Amino acid sequence: MYVAFDQLPPEARVWIYQANRQLTGPEIVSVLPVLSRFVEEWTSHGRSLHASAEFLHQRFLVIGLDQEVAGASGCSIDASVRFVAQLEQLLAVELLDKSRLAFLHNGTVQLLQRSELKAAVASGTLATNTFYFDNTLATKAELDTAWPRPAGETWLARYFGQAKENQQPA
Image (cartoon, rainbow, N blue to C red; front, top):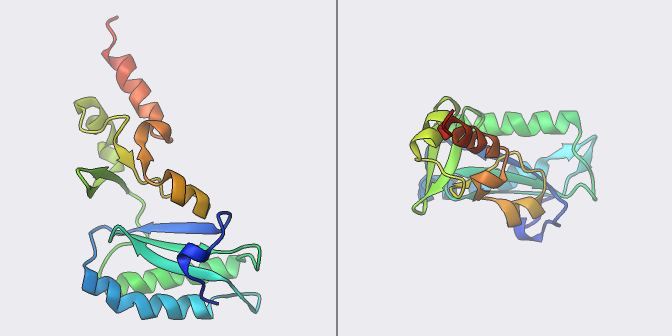
């Protein structure tokens, strides 16, 4: 059953899929009926799920599920991943690739390959206060309050500690 995204409770489970490029307004509008249909038909062991899906920042597909009504099973999660793969084909975009990290820089979402992370920290391109989209968040409350948040407050903090250690004289 479709639920407006802002009506999902704070403890709702979320899955965040990051596009490898910014989507256009017309692209997003064109898939809104597809998102609604998926959420309407999404079930777990024959039970309708109270869920929603939307694009944020023209870059992130977020699927939310009110687990108090019914939780997702392995099969229903697999169905959602198959749906995301279909969206990739429909939009000619990558949503399932986890090799890029997204940061907010001057109001624009910018992507960085994981392999480039250490060099970006060392050069100062990426700082502790650079806003990072941590797509591993689990709940709508985290999405609403900590996404994006300063990189130094996320799992990336360890990279900044290493950069400082490397800069200290021996």
